Image (cartoon, rainbow, N blue to C red):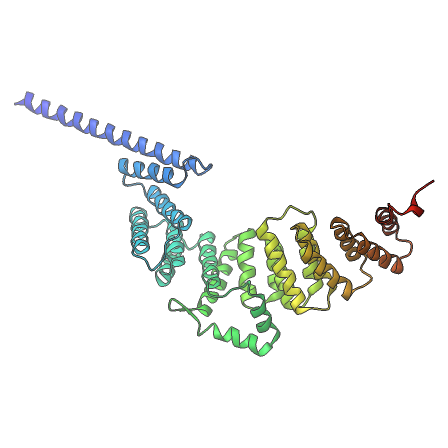
Length: 397
């Protein structure tokens, strides 16, 4: 009997040891897959499909790792944004439910992780589940009230949601609301009665202010992205001086330019846009497009200002759009006949297109204003030599 008992005890110990060994081995392999996934984030090898495979393999081996669930949820969110689906479609509803389930599984495994809960709140909030997002943000802060990052995330999410409702790149509308004090006040009051999924814009802005202040009191330091969201908040509130200060800190030239246009400080706006165009070829097509749009905003609001027309000429020249460039240089000269650079750049375009006679007229116009202009004198001489190269009187005997 004692022998049987010993055998049973040893057998139990052996079984438990084997089970523990297998469990530890599975956890170890799962961790390897998770580590491999994290390494893949540093490059583009395999892409989203490969990353999803690694996370799912990790979860099959160890289904109790909250971090893996969170990473899989985030990956599905990234996949959704890379291959957008119509939100009214059954495919989107099914995909959204799946992602929520994955995040919720992670929260069940680690319910007091405030930052992970905030990530979940940000996702569902940006997908339209607004009230649930606010609830989850508040829950995460209740778990970790001294975490400045949680307060800042909640604040920044509020501004992000409002920006989906208010187009802060609509310069025309912003100018109209800012210039007319009555309309400005009406716009601010309308935030009380403008709702996003049942929550007023005023409420979102109030939350932003409260949570942002708490984050700073807890020692948070703003980076460029956070300064940009703060500037967006200032602009939505029409606090343009604060918006300008914070867009400078965020180094967002386009929005800084837009603020100067709204304030009517057009030359400051043009000076920023000019820096965008100095050093041709360094701007992407989208940046050229935004710079052009902002220059047009200046011309529409300050049509007697020659500077935006000059820089529009430079922009079209950079893009090889000669006809538009010539038109804008002419407009600049019409508004300011003494602007030497407009004459020089227009003459250069005439030379490039074989209209040397027109280039000569531009050099002559410069010398009428500045008789000792060396470059114009040299270029005029060269243009004459080219234009009249076949003239017998110019040929040396």
